[in-house]
Length: 428
Ligand code: HEM
Image 1 (tube, helix red, strand yellow):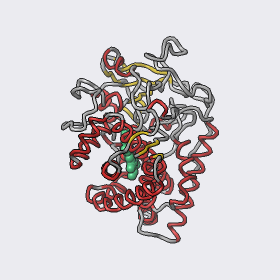
Image 2: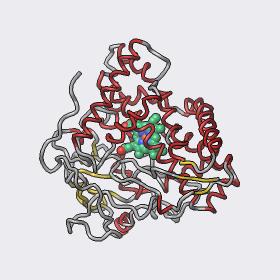
Image 3: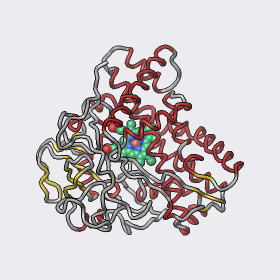
């Protein structure tokens, strides 16, 4: 197998362990470099984004920031510009994997995963898995999601209050679902949860550690592929192995392994955090909670609004401009890194009325939390079903659900691409 996980090169994007937490340029005082803010910005609370995004949208919608790697990027904050970056082929994901390309976090991510490809290569690989995530397929999975939710909530009820909703529901539900879908043993969850956390690290973790986790996760998937080859099941990884083994060039071994990694990492980290953030938001907005309770049929609409307001990360993945592009009057020279802020786009007053207000009855909600364009989230249907079923069932079964600690005490770790509250103690 070709080695695709390189050691980090020295230079401006060399390993960093120091700049783990940066200031919010609005509320946190001046950034260490007076001219450029450090990215990511610090949140004022577990749910609210740094007010610097709103300031940028109103004044300088495309501005340079210094990423934890030390490299610079253009942070893009308005709805229209973010959509352009995500769907215009002049912004490439593949170019981020080239040697010496600017990068966000401590280690390079130079492997051929779905998220790191551009069309037409990307289109060929995506087609192989997209049929597993159709509306019909997700509808078939709904009873299974309900079954797991009921089982997890039975255990929570039986143990009695207080309970931490993250290990009780938000973590095991999406992880169990993605494990079943892929054919990954659920018993291995602690191992791959650790590697996957390192995979998504943007700061606060040495490059060597990130790289070691990337290699461990790749080796784990390679062993799983070997196992499926010997003893195929009815799962997605077995199906992908047989596509590869047909030998018609549709999927090579590296693509197979990194497709498995993409699905495993993207398939649980994001939804875990989305469920946690969503429940916290409802418990801290009593009128909105009452509105969801009064009409459980409206959970679909409520889910979209929770995704818009509290996505499990502020930015989509880094892109590189492959030619000069102008956005909001700012020239982005070819070779520059660009960070499209989904969270900021979702709060753009030019697109959403009362953009900073949580309104679970909002009718028109074209949020960008699942991205846009070629890399639009393949698991969005599954994620929506998991979010709707888990939140609706939780609210139905626990009519007196409330936070067991003040909101200000809830931890939301930074230094990760995907994040949310890491503990959510509740009582009832
Ligand atoms: C609330 C939960 C989720 C959110 C907010 C979310 C968000 C996103 C976003 C924003 C992207 C595009 C990233 C970019 O263009 O830079 C993406 C892509 C992706 N997501 Fe999700 N996701 C979620 C759940 C899931 C689930 C459950 C799965 C797996 C089954 C999944 C699998 C993927 C994959 C494989 C891609 C890459 C698609 C491609 O490159 O063509 N996601 N997701």
